[in-house]
Length: 278
Image (cartoon, rainbow, N blue to C red; front, side, top):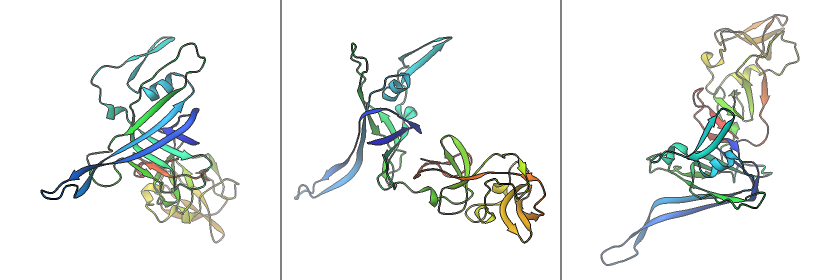
């Protein structure tokens, strides 16, 4: 069994697990006097089959992404979409995580998955089980590696400190260290240094791609949980480090460890295109 995420959303109930298949596509190279001299890799046929045993509009659009969802007041329905729409615009990232996996070695990532199966409903049955088959479209025009899929993900711990990370729709910044620790991108009130709140160490806000600009948030000073002699270290309104007596009130940015075994699914770590982890 596996957990399957399409466009970052958990598919939920599946009937008979899923089947991931990869076929290498070759072109024959024949010499004038020697047939079958070589084969040249010209493409990849990558497919994922999922059996769905839950019927609702979102599951139907999983199988038929070009359905048009029409809403008029309290009424809503699905209908056929305008012709000649491009499938690439409806393709989504697909992530397959083996259930109870303790590593990322066999996670599967399809960069642009598009469903090509038909939908069939058998009336007279309370639940209609149906199969959705996705095919991997090329990520781009490149002929280089990693244009369709990958098996095995980079762990969240490989992300540089200061990079932006998205998890379950929430935006964070990665703290420095080979772990899953992050810092929130909003403040959580104010307090003195000794308040029992989870805050990052000064060292976690250094290294990686951290700069004063990336540390600065809303031109507001906030505490770390590191000490400077009898004082405490804080991040100033410009993003630089300074120290002050521990009884001073500054803002609080909470830090936390994201749960589970997490890998990088997409993104480049900028605020506009954060690393999506799952």
